Image (cartoon, rainbow, N blue to C red):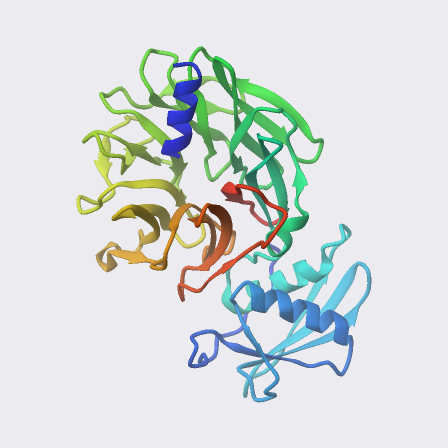
Length: 390
């Protein structure tokens, strides 16, 4: 994000499931779900609670709901369920898991079977939080962020986390006195390794959708430009060579375009850069100041922060339907910033800065519904990044 670039500059001057047709939805726009508790009541309620929290279903006590969920069996490592549309034939869904995430992966299996998209319940969010006046990166489950665990312990600025497509790695920017580095984390081994230590700025690394490359911002050649890093041999290639400063890169699903913030007109706006030639074109000529983009490989939609008046608000552009224009998701008080797509391509996490507090919010990009993801325990939460499914 632009703020991090400025800060760093100042420092050194799914499984395959049966698929069923989505039935007509309720008046709220979200299908209703009746949880049958005739068997495995506790597990059924837990699954229903997750589906409700992540906006895919609206749990109801009305047995005439759009869908009915029955949990046939549930052990420590395997589950068997039936999801049945009203007036239709039920589909049996079976799920196995050895890592203690069976309930979450069962909920994700239902999302995948009904809506034909990846789930969300077994994913995690990496974010920055300040404690003891030090910004470190934490990782936690979206519906219980107050119990997140610290990933870094650098006792300085650890910012801009970004996940690999398989969720097994994470990169972040480490800002130390007189230098910034890009650090690669193996999430299984919990090992941290500096992979970009050029003179000057090393910041804003983002994985390509195939996980083979990073886009990042370097100033090693005297100007702040976009570069690519081949993760097989760590070789870097310069992408841009222009009068602007670029930051906050992210990739399109095909891996041939990098979307980034650039200040060609002295105002940060979003530009699409050819990943090979560096040729730039604006995402839109109508945008005012726009920062913090993220591009979903599932929905092919871009979310970003768009400045309106004194504050930022979360906006979305559907790259499959550019004629639809910009959809503004947030309109209430506060500055809404730093959005990141969930693996389902529908929900996103962002920061709401209001009344001196920074709170992470879950936003349903379909309905615009927003809700805080934590109430206490997180101080100055910022820069969230939503992982793929594990």
